[in-house]
Length: 314
Image 1: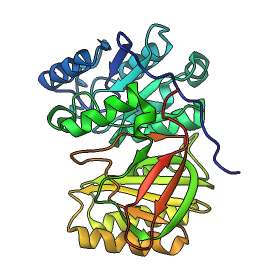
Image 2: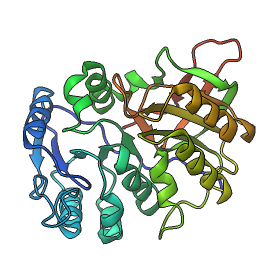
Image 3: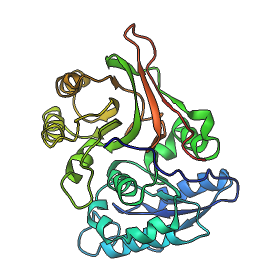
């Protein structure tokens, strides 16, 4: 069965109400405040979910209890006045709360803009598979890169308000690891989270016909090898039409990372682009998931691009 495009949410406009939630790690209050100021500068009306600034009473790497983090996301999504849900930060914890969400109720509430990356990959996958909604792989409100990098903010802002202006994605760093052209529906995110999600209830069993987008942070080359090997062994890479690689910050010397990517992905017989410019990096591009796209990786060393065939938002 080939991946099909998912239902897209409506674009935002000045005055749109945006809920900020923390499904994973604890959120520094000062960083949250600065991030909210940027949203207000864009003309949005941000509302902070009740437990965003909580810290779990015993496990201080979590932003509050699993039940409270799930409740915040559930209530925000099911609130008809909320047009978008943006995560405050990643970290760890989404796996612990994803099965506590009422997915039939979320699906019934319809598609909304959902933004995050890193640990939020778990929720991107869940919205795709359990609700049938397209989501947005982009910076989070209290993430350092959102606060400090204008290009990162601008990419998200354009996606939210004028998505047709950013349908062609790819920084100058993007090069062909395996040249070619591929078409498919985008899916993926942080590759270690994709591997961790595999085999869990409701997880993806096939990426056939899809364009896999992957990036990560802090995983040494041998760990990336293990992650990609596991995905290959369980069949998660079978039938994909192409691979789009983002940043690998803190994953060791890039020459070693490239060698792993070439070894584990180069034999799939599909185009592979490296360093497209998304993930845990400055000037990070916002990238829609669940939409049809074309990956162009010229053999002559020309610029590599990922072009969505429809805007991220309607």
